[in-house]
Every structure is written in structure tokens, then in C-alpha cells.
Length: 110
Image (cartoon, rainbow, N blue to C red):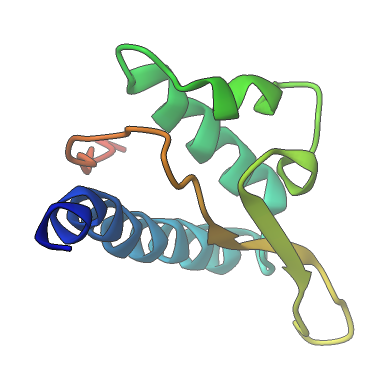
């Protein structure tokens, strides 16, 4: 039982780090453009995938020309934002993908 718990820990930490990063990105984009942008989440997730030395097979559906809402492991939900109900990424689940590492925050020098 201890072995299973230790295998799940990296995935839990990854999820705990990734979701706040996506939410911060979403808030920054929303403040700049007056709404929530699925496109900015799309670009952030593709950028993250590109930083992985060997992206897992589960990420093969993560492509530039498809919506993240159609990707394996991604869940989207329509959220109220004024009169609009934009779709946003609300959950990322890639169990057994073997993803390990840290998410880095890069400052923009604008």
C-alpha cells in the first residue's frame, strides 16, 4: 500500500501545481481581454507539453489544430462570465502518464 501512495504523490503534486498556474494565466488573460480565454489555456498547455522531454502517449491528442476540450485528460466547463458562457479548462487528469518535474513560471519583460 505504501508503494502505491508514493507513486501517486508526484501526480498529486503536479496537479496541485498545474491547476493554480492555469487559473493565474486565465485571470491574467481575462483582465487583459475582458473575458476568459480558452485559447490562452490552449497555448499554455501546448507550451507545457513542449517542455516535457518525452510527452506521454496520453498527450498525443494535444494538437495545435484541436480544442483542448477534445484532448485526452482535459475537462472543460462553460462558466458564466457576464452575459457569456465561455468554455474553460477546469480539470487535467493524466493518471499513469509518468509525468514528473516542476512547472516553471516565466516573467514577461513587457
